[in-house]
Image (cartoon, rainbow, N blue to C red; front, top):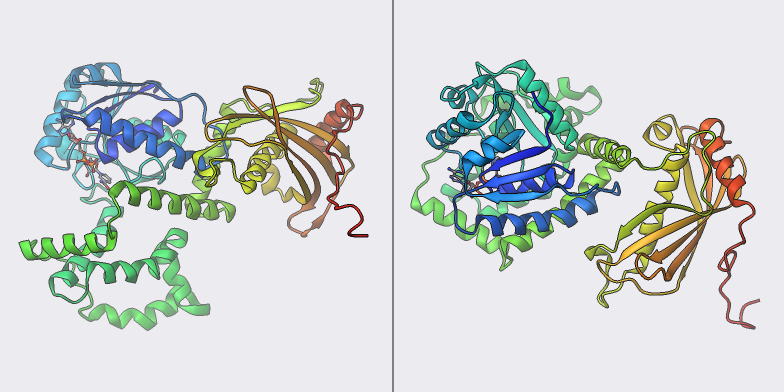
Length: 496
Ligand SMILES: NC(=O)c1ccc[n+]([C@@H]2O[C@H](COP(=O)([O-])OP(=O)(O)OC[C@H]3O[C@@H](n4cnc5c(N)ncnc54)[C@H](O)[C@@H]3O)[C@@H](O)[C@H]2O)c1
């Protein structure tokens, strides 16, 4: 299978556009096709909505975006792309036809992945030339934020194609889940569908409204699912004895008619109840409004998961680490000359960083300085491995001096100067400049302590990290002290 520089996106609706955003952000070129009028404009709109959310999710800088092109020719996509992600509606006959056409023109070493939500790859590949490269790559909406992708092959799919697709999705910051047996609905939709069918039954029977059903999820089990899923959550439901007690306790309920599972008939009345119910819940908010709300909350949830090094948070941390490395984030090596001051970080004022005056909010200055500190940490070798080994730097004091405003979209550059160093303390100073005018916008002075996170106390630094910081200190010790160093606030004569 070939290296993947260009991905072909066939069908550019909700899922196709979501895939495109994820790939473009990671420098992969896209060639897309969709026969529907206005498809290209709608796709571009989704991509633009996706970027702020992706950037908010992670501090790690994205490299240069991939290039984007759109064509009306499916044949051109098939002949150009190194990997094809098909996202046409989930209709078996249509999938077989479109995949058959793609397979006709795509070189044999190009993987054909379908985003299908439940169809069998053995059926789709039956009509394809070189069926061994066809598989399912089933993502979740929004594809640019949610990491899960189920990878499943059919009778004829080769292990090589599965391995290549898995590695590619992993490199795109996803969490590939191999579905080992070929089953309809895969793992995730089989679970989702069970819940969905129960919801439809309850609405059809007039037992609950769509709003009540959603409340039953969002205030309770839904909050737990992101952390531990269903099985491990129920392990906790059994108290000290865990799952065994849980099954003894609730096992008999499995005999009771608590679920229906077979879907109810989709009558006009049921459709109306579902539509009217969800419209009432939306309460005048557009789909785009709700997408923004969903994205903001997903970002917050996943960031907490990352801090706790669990579930989807670990996928995001892995993706970030890879992006830092890919950007060739400067890392000091023994013998390297050190710039005085260091210039390790730059960024752009994000839309969500500005306040009602259109200026960057106070707290976001600190956030940007935090990112600049992260760049210094990486430079001296404080990375995921270092933290996993039980060491970190904790900030114990911060002074900020706000000098000028920054507006949305403006470029920012940072300089970093060490003001002092010993085995347990790093005294540092960052200056934030306007990237175009060079104006000084804000400074921060910080004291950080080196900590043994296991023992929860300060501990001396040793080894390569201390060597790197010592090299920085050697280069910075003779720099003039910044004007803002050690500044105190005072209204003269009022506080002694
Ligand atoms: N929406 C979800 O939450 C979700 C989640 C995971 C997987 N999926 C799967 O992703 C696929 C796409 O779903 P969606 O929600 O994006 O649907 P969608 O209706 O938003 O988009 C489908 C797109 O395919 C286009 N299309 C139709 N025929 C085509 C053809 N011959 N060639 C190229 N494009 C064609 C349509 O014009 C449309 O833009 C389906 O297989 C679906 O099961 C959907």
